[in-house]
Length: 326
Image (cartoon, rainbow, N blue to C red; front, side, top):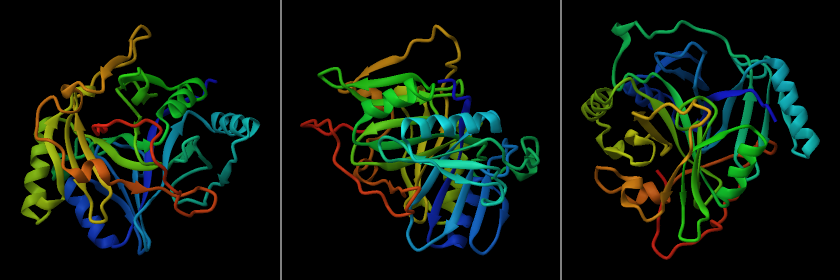
């Protein structure tokens, strides 16, 4: 199917202390587009849409939904019809239901992840050359979602065969079974990655930085504001994706990756890069080993229909020596 999905567009996170979370994300260099007593809408300096991260004040920290932008309203209808015809339950949210967003619909993907599609979002001023507003890590734009699922192969097949995603890199185990996969619609390494693990859960949301030094600047600002302990892993470089990375935990434990350094994947003859699960350079090309929390902890996700937490399960593939995602 030609889904006309353009890219990952936004994520909606529930947080328990809105003011504390706002302070943290502003320290990273996000721009506050708009806020009220229940919500904070954030975006990167490069972004011309109203927001790429929405924080909602709630009792428990969870991922409400991760959203993809499609080309047009007509494409939105075609995609919804496709899901309905194949038996996937669709929940429509009409224009005006969500602030700054046009019509959208939500589904639960085959592995239980909450996914939304939309075509229209209010436009705002791009602040790319407002260098007087650059602070912290000077976050530019949303880049990808990274999710733990119990059956990577199922989502890999579904997103490629049904939604038109392409694979940039993937990891296989000793039996040549897919352990993890990096899939994209925009011409970069990924819009979403699926990893073998306890799931469905959101491992992290990745945001693009203009250069590696911005990542270091972000560390300095966070430490100066008392957030040094929120730095979970990095700086370092992944072998897979070539990303220069830093992983952070926001005040509620949601994981954010600051990200720079991947590559173009738009050529039609581009071939996915295969990694062996036991290759030590796959996860860390250089840098310190990840802490246990990075392997074991991730954000719970909601059911888009019931708005209740989705029950997690154990991964299909097992390994005697733990191997995890990047």
